[in-house]
Image (cartoon, rainbow, N blue to C red; front, side, top):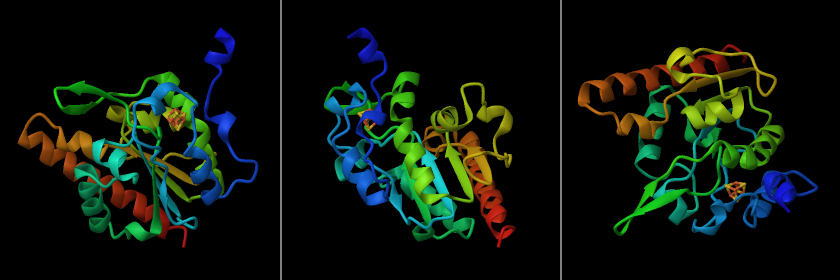
Length: 214
Ligand code: SF4
């Protein structure tokens, strides 16, 4: 039983035929880790199956959990702004998260974001791998440390390698930058402005990597 618990993951719920529609439907019933128990619903990725760019966040937030769509809260609005500034149309990208259920702790009537652990990230990775396999993007952008940990490994540090185009077996290029939520949570206005500028610049680098492959 203990072994079964340890090896539990989204892999047990993958459909035989992988299309975005089949994956989305199957992920709805995923019990690959305990996070499904307290979340409203699975928040699967959204966007074009032909997207050349996939952006990967951490996990759905409060609004995403309620609406069932990724990046619809305040962080999503900042991401929209950054995409527009980089000349990227949101309709041309695929947005998803490393973990598909909202992990939270109660604070009074509020649900506060709780960081997913490495076992939850690993348990959910089969969904992310399947999304990448089906779409076959040219560039993957990791938004924040959780996405970078899932796709680039635990030793990757955003503080050291943020904004660098990296070669990867998963796409022609990978790049990691801040999660928009981290920008919004910056401890003071100076830092918030600096992180916002860096996020915008990093997405421009990702956009240029696409135009270089035209
Ligand atoms: S977080 Fe991922 S692995 Fe865990 S139950 Fe949700 S979809 Fe499944």
